[in-house]
Length: 187
Image (cartoon, rainbow, N blue to C red; front, side, top):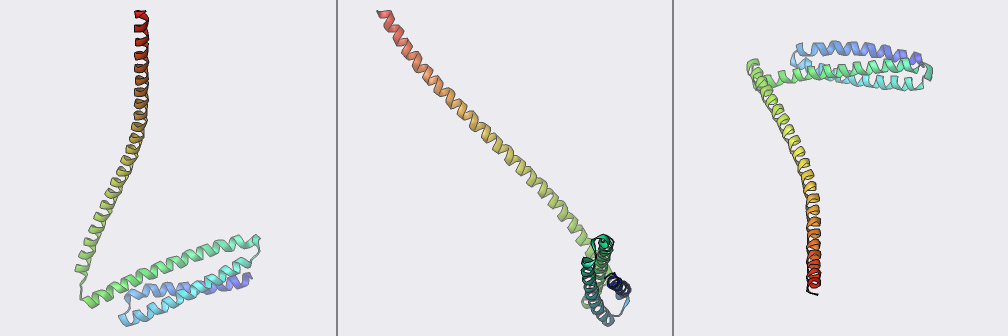
């Protein structure tokens, strides 16, 4: 089993080295060769993913005692694969920027000024978003405080109503006792 894994490892190493080399060459190639190279790299990335899947299946079949070492290798290979995909995306973005500039007839200066303008707008949007978040947080806190105040006022109203009721009862009792005393005084 481990010999299959090591064979896959060697194939993966050769393939990733070739992909890395091609990714580095993409920005310097003429446009027609770039298309071919991008398509070629995409195919090789798919092959590398398939190799990783095969290696993963092999690791699952390895006994538990030695599986840890192979699992660590797999993690590093997956990280390497992620880095290759990121590098490829970056080279494709650079390639697509060049194609766009060729089609639109843009020169580098206007592109740079547009990027600077976009970065400024992005920063403004981020600042505005932070302000909105802060405002929203304040509104939520204010709402919570308002609810607490309404609950306190509701409790206070109940207390005042009970006190009024006691005062009415006391007033009624005083009226009765006053009549009783007046009646006693007349007798």
